[in-house]
Amino acid sequence: MHLFKKEFILKLLLLALLYSIIPLSETLLILHLGGIFGNYLVLAVAATTGLIGLLVAYGEVEVIIKLIKTKLKEGIYPGKEFISLAGVLTGGLLLLTPGFITDSLGFLLFFPFFRNLVGRIITSRMENSLKDIYEYLKLYELE
Image 1 (spheres, rainbow, N blue to C red):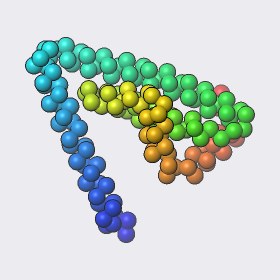
Image 2 (image 1 turned 60 degrees about the vertical axis):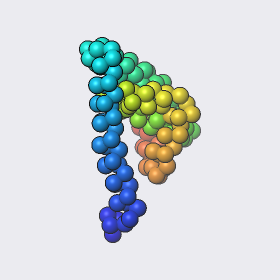
Image 3 (image 1 turned 180 degrees about the vertical axis):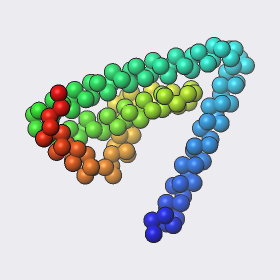
Image 4 (image 1 turned 90 degrees about the vertical axis):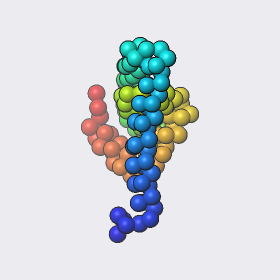
């Protein structure tokens, strides 16, 4: 059974470790910076960077969706755009998470190299599903 394989359990434990380490490190960083610059300033900067990042991510998603629509009208499979969209959405999710470390990682995903790298990792197991989505969208051309 899939649930009892060593690889699955190891991945699950690593995910749980990341899930606990990242918020702890974010909290420590915010407390440390709050002691240096003041708590209110640090919280304001963290909130502002997250908000600006989400606005940039929204703009990027709009551009990618327009490219997908164009490729759909031309009858071309938008594989690169799906990969890019997965990277940008991941960056937006990281920017939505409060903290400087996740904001930095989220902003890093706006650079095409990192965006495509993360997008490929995410979409590598979804290729058949993405092709099904492409066929569905072709039938119902989005406008």
